[in-house]
Amino acid sequence: MQVLLLKDVEGLGHAGDIKRVAGGYAQNYLIPNKLAVVATDGALKQARSIQDATRRRTDRKLTEAKALAGRIEGQTLTFKMRSGEGDRLYGSITNADISARLAQVAGAEIDRRYVDIEHPIKTLGRHVVTVKLGSGMNAQVAVLVERAAEEA
Image (cartoon, rainbow, N blue to C red):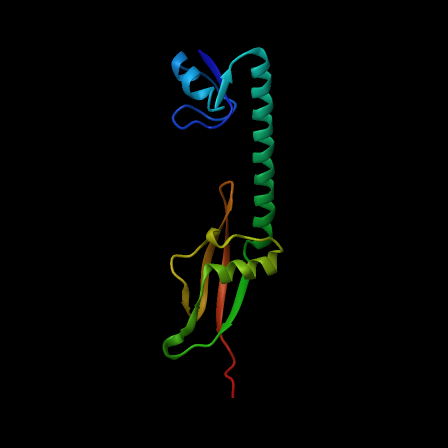
């Protein structure tokens, strides 16, 4: 039996695909759970519209990711922090701090989970951080940590 997948089904295919499956699998699982419909002429038109919508959405996300990458690629984010001996910071700079500073600089909210640092930054100096923008796009951002002026 041929079915049109309405949603992604693990191990079978993606939304909009037309697949040949066993009749029982289609009638007892895919169709009742609204994961697929029987492949008719109307369903094929629906498949084309689903694929077109998916393609447009993917293209839009890629365009947005490229634009954001252009705004933040090569940016240097400067943090002034108090530090002690050996250039160790009193505290640390986390991915949330970097995300907040990027929001100020780039004007776009970037979730802290997309700022890729293994450990919080705890030393003075220049550190390179990768920001994942989705659609396979990444941007490199420099984080410059300077010593804050000592208070009297």
